[in-house]
Image (cartoon, rainbow, N blue to C red; front, top):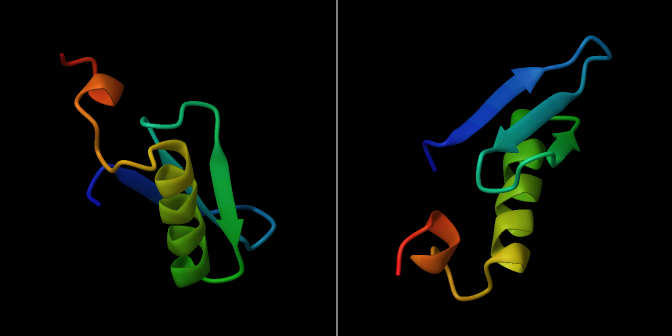
Length: 58
């Protein structure tokens, strides 16, 4: 998923954000944990996958 921003916080945690879930940040102790958590959140929010309706399409 190339639309995920991954960065290290001042506290030493890894954070992941995506425009698909504005305002949501997933945190983890490792890069992998943060990525897994953001992907899980996307899957829960869009259970049918990358729906066209979710991206503003018809």
